[in-house]
Structure formats: structure tokens, C-alpha cells
Amino acid sequence: MENPVTPARGTQEPMIRLKHVSKTFTDGKDGVKALVDVNLDIMPGDIFGIIGFSGAGKSTLVRCINLLERPTSGEVIVDGVDLTQLDEKALRQVRQRIGMIFQHFNLMPSRTVTENIEMPLKLTTLTPAERKAKISSLLELVELSDKADAYPSQLSGGQKQRVAIARALANDPKVLLCDEATSALDPKTTRSILKLLREVNQRLGITIVVITHQMSVVKYICDRAAVMEKGRVVEEGTILEIFSHPKMPVTKGFIDTATNVDDLYELLEETRSGDGVNHGQTVYLLTYTGSSAGKPLMVELYQRFGVEANIIFGNVELLKGTPLGKLAVTLSGTPESVGNALEFIRSQNVVVEAL
Image 1: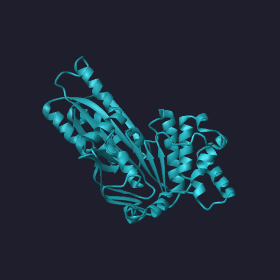
Image 2 (image 1 turned 90 degrees about the horizontal axis):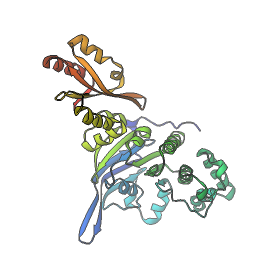
Image 3 (image 1 turned 90 degrees about the vertical axis):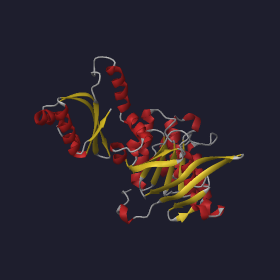
Image 4 (image 1 turned 30 degrees about the vertical axis):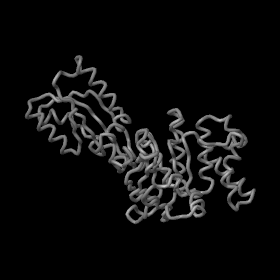
């Protein structure tokens, strides 16, 4: 199947639009605010990540997208329809075009792989022959054609999630919601499931929403992401924007883990008490993006300003094809020359942070 052709982002209406969505759970006299005035636009064909620590509200948010949880207030617009205005019958029809997968797979243990995938198809007008062909196509897509007659107990965790993905795709949804879909899987299996989701997105043009507490998942698969804290969206942007210019402490904490910068902080704690970094010497974390990642700036600092750079940490990776580099250095020279060197570094579109 050829990749779908999508119009330019500026000409599109969002596939999912959340407008002033709030959710309060009532418990006796007190209410727990799970979501507070959330506004989000998710464009057709995007893989959109929603990340946050436990209790941030991200799972409540994803359940509001298909109205498994009804918001206390606000609008949930999917493919141009405000779901909050629909009656239950109309809502059931719309939900057929919103697939969902979960952390613990939610397969029927007494049904075979084929029977699990067939369950949503029994509510359609497809004939048994058409259902069989559809299931065969889905099994091929998730690379489980040889497991058609197996039971969930005979499958690995990754295989169970592949079955869940096939079942979620059975009604040709426009949206696929993934609620911590890889949290119960080992790193290698997680990567294989994320690759499958990316292939589904590219082949079928499905908009995918990924709920996770793992920034490495967002980094690997998502086009854009929102960061949640205490029921609010505190930051949103492209993956490159978020990783290169995080604005909020919670975002920076996630990114430090995903880019191994947290290892740097541990290293600094050790070396500052030993011989690695002189007491009182400032360590600068430099963040490079795009073409600036390939510039030999450390050499230029010595040539231009007589400043020597001691590199104590380095990390470079690709985000959506764009290099992102992080370098921790100490700078040796006169206060004036170090100040001039830092000004020069910033002029090269490098973000400088004193640690």
C-alpha cells in the first residue's frame, strides 16, 4: 500500500481537537482535578506523544478522547465531530473509528488470535469470507500469520501486543490510542512494537496518540509531543523543539533521562569531590542542533580566544533526521576570554547552560 498523501499542515483541520477540557473526579465532598483546561490540536497522520509522570493525567486524557471518560467540561472534537454532544448510539458508531491498545493487552484468554481479532468485526456487515480475508491481512501486517490458531497464553508479551494492534485496526480506524502500550515490555520488544506502530502510521495514514512516561518512546516514534503535569499541558512542540529547548523543569527531567544527561550529573557529583573537575570550576552544557552539531567549535575557541575546552561528556543522536548533540565542557582562560568564548558559542545557535 502506498503512503497516503497529506496536505500541508497549515491547510489542515486537526484530526483531534481538545478545547478547554477539564475532568474532576468527585469523592465525597472533595473533588480530584485530573485534567485542568487542556487544549490540544493533533493533526491528521501525526504520531503525537503525551508524556508525564504517574498521576499527571495523561491516561485520563486519552480516555477522554474516545469518551471512555466523559469530561466535566470542554469539547472533544474528533474528525470534525464534538463527541461530547453525541448520544450513546452515535458515540458507539464513532468509537468504531477510534482504535485503542493498552498496557496489558486486554485479550480474551479463551479465544484464539483469530477470534480475538474477529471480535470487533462481528459488529459489522462483513460476510464470514470477508472477515476471514480481513483477519488474514491484519495478521500479515503484524507479522503473526503463523499464530492464527494460537491462544494468548502461548504468546510472548510482544506477540500479545501485536494481536491487540491487529484487533484495534480491524474497523479501519482513523485514530489509534496507545495507553502505555509498551510499558510491560522489555526494551528490545518495545522497539519492535514502536517500529510496527510507525509502519502502521506510514502505510495506513492513521493518527496515533501515544501515552507514556518514557521519553525514549516519544523520542523514537513521535512527531510532536505534549508534556503533562498535575492535570495540565505545560509544554508542547515538535520533538526537536522539546529536546533542544525544553522550557519546563519536568520536561528537562524527562529529556535528561532520555539523552543520558542524568549520567552526567552523577559524574559531576563524583568528579567534583575528586580530581576530575576542579572545585569552583564551572561546567557548561552545550546543546547543538542541525548544522551546528557538526562545527568544530572547541578548536575555534582556542584559535580565536586562547580558551582551552576540557570535554567531560558528549552525546549525539538523530531526531527525525536532525542531529542533536550535547557536550559538557569546562573552559580554561581569563574571565574575559571565557566570556567572549561563551558569547561566540551562543552566536553559533548553540544553547549554553551553566551546571
